[in-house]
Each structure stands twice: as structure tokens, then as C-alpha cells.
Amino acid sequence: MPDPRFFDDMGPASLQELARLGGAELADASLGSRSIAHVAPLDAADGRAVSFFSDAKRRDAAAATQAGACFVRPEHRDLLAPGCAALLTAHPQAAWATAATRLHAPRRHEPLSASIHPDCELEDGVRLSPGVTVGQGARIGRGTHLSPGAVIGPGVTIGRDCLIGPNAVIGFAIIGDRVSIHAGAVIGEAGFGAAGGPRGVVDLPQLGRVVIQDGVTVGANSCIDRGAFTDTTIGENTKIDNLVHVAHNVRLGRNCVLAAYTGLSGSTVVGDGVAFGGKAGVADHLTIGSGASIGASASVFKDVPAGETWTGFPARPLKRWLRETAWLSRMAGGRGTRG
Image (cartoon, rainbow, N blue to C red):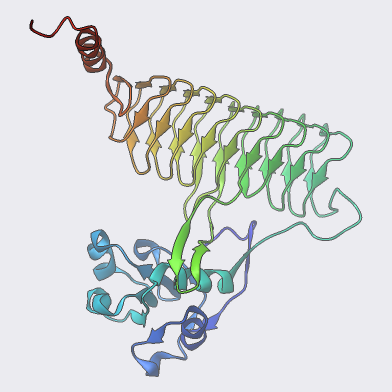
């Protein structure tokens, strides 16, 4: 279930309504009155949830799902668990996005003349600069300083002794103590999710949160996206430079360092004590082991074992990269050719 601090519950809806909104056909029309309250992934759904199945790699999850309904292509309907109503469509993910929008709505700032909502909670010693906005239900701890123009969204929790820089925007987030978020950083915006539908590409609702643990620093103009379903997590004492992007569902360990222009794609898992050089990039759904180092401008397309140093394009172990670079240099200089 999406966190009610950040998302309003707009349900329930009948399967008949969800099928109509998503342009799908209910395989068993007698189930049209079944009530659906929320959306969820296949492996986290209950009987009141609707999910989608579009990736053959998730056959096991489809066969075991407890979802009350699932958007699925006609040829895959028999892969669903017994009792899961099939909503047949050529575009399962796009149809599911329509259902998610119907059932859940991100909470927005209420249209009040006051910039500090009366329903927020500020501990003693919170310092508010001119132009700060704090939404309904937000909670901010003692000794935290909000700089001019900072925007704190509904339901956001910020711990004690934090510094929120000028024009930083924070939403859908739970933030620990002694966290510094510098000027212009954006925490908790929607991650990049899209799917093709009958009318073109549609956005996929992002229903997760951002969790930032104690002692983290986030540099100026960096972006940390909220999760699609689960949380995007930044581990304790991690230091993020300016102009870094952390995508949705990333789990970043403790005591990591990320230099400027680093980009971590969605669902990347990073262990503790990992260092990223400037402009390093990591593809989605990879694992970077604890203590690893990723060189500047490296492009990572494979899992990196713990403690190893990788660099290059595509990234590979440092010693291998050095040997290959030396060989290329010899070939380019003509010393490796025969007369």
C-alpha cells in the first residue's frame, strides 16, 4: 500500500470500471463487481490489489500471486494464479497505470494563503527563512534550518539538526538527523517510468518514497527520485556531490561517496563504502559490492564484486583496463606491427 502520508486513497473501484478505464477486457465478466482498493506488484499483492504481468521472466511471480486481478496479454492469461481475475489487454503496464491513477493520488500542497500549513509540526528551535513553504502533515525536528525558498511537501519528515539549502524541494521523503541538502536539490520527485499504450507513451505512477538516513549530504542541484513501489534509500553518512542523479528504487549503502555527474539507474543496489568517480554511470538492476570503486566516466553494465576497482567503457576491472589500454597504445604507435 502506498504510504498514506504521501498518497490519498481514491478507491475502491470495481473490475468493470478498471477494465473500462484501461481499455481492457475482463476475461470472466461475472467478476465485474469485484472491488479493488489499491495497486501492487505481483509478489506483494493481496486479494484487493490489481497488478500487471508483462515480463516472461516473472512467470513464477504470476503463478504465485495473491492479487485480486491482473492486467495481462491474452496469450498469458493462463499463467496467472487461480482466483486472479485476468484483465486482457495488449498493453498491460499502460492499462495498470490508468488503474493506479484512479486508485491513488499524490498529496499536494493545499491552496492556502499561509506558506506554513497549520497542520505541520515544528519542534522548538526550527529556523524558517523567508519564502519557506511547509505542507500539511510535515514534521521537522529541533535545530533544523530551512533556507530561503525551501519547499517541504505534505507528510515529509525531517529529523533534527538538518540543513535544507535555498530552493531545495523535498517531497515523499523521510529524512534522518544531521542531514544536509544543498541548494536546488530535489528529493522525492517521480522516478522515470513509462510504457507504451494505444495512444502513445504514458507515465507510470511512482508510489514509493525516499528514505535518507542520518548524516547524509546531498549536493546542490542533485536529484533523488522516489521509488516506484518500494523506497529509494540513501545509507547513513553517505556523501553525494553536486549534480548527481539517483533513480527510483536505488538502495545506496552507508559511507558511500558519489562525485559530480554520477548517475545510478533504477533498482541499482550499492553496498557500503563504495566510491564513484565523476561522471560514472551504472545501468539498472545491477549490484555494486561493498568497498568497490568505480572510476571517473566509467559505464557499468555488469555487477561489480565487492572490493574491486572498475573503470572504462564498458567498465571492467582496473588491471584489465590498464593492459588493454597499453596494448591499444602500442598498436596505435605501430610498435606492435611487423615490418
